[in-house]
Amino acid sequence: MSSEYLPREDCRVTVCKLPPHVKGLCTVKGTDELIFINEDLSEEAKMAAFAHELRHLRRGDLYSEEPLEEIEKE
Image (cartoon, helix red, strand yellow):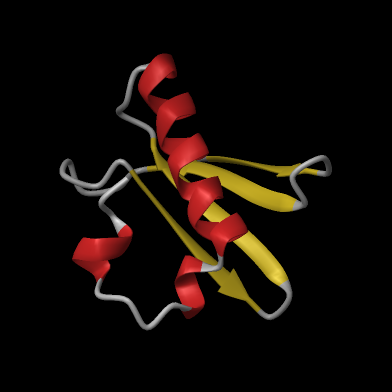
């Protein structure tokens, strides 16, 4: 597992073991924005998962009352 703070994005990204069907996920703990990326993805897929999760954070999706199915329709 590796973890890195990205000052430009003001978030911490951790590459770790996740279930095979999960490419990535994001959450907020206190004031820290956290992104977790599945370590089994290719480098290209990791970058795509990171961009996807960062969009969720920037759009405020974690605070949305929209159903998950609607939020994930990108």
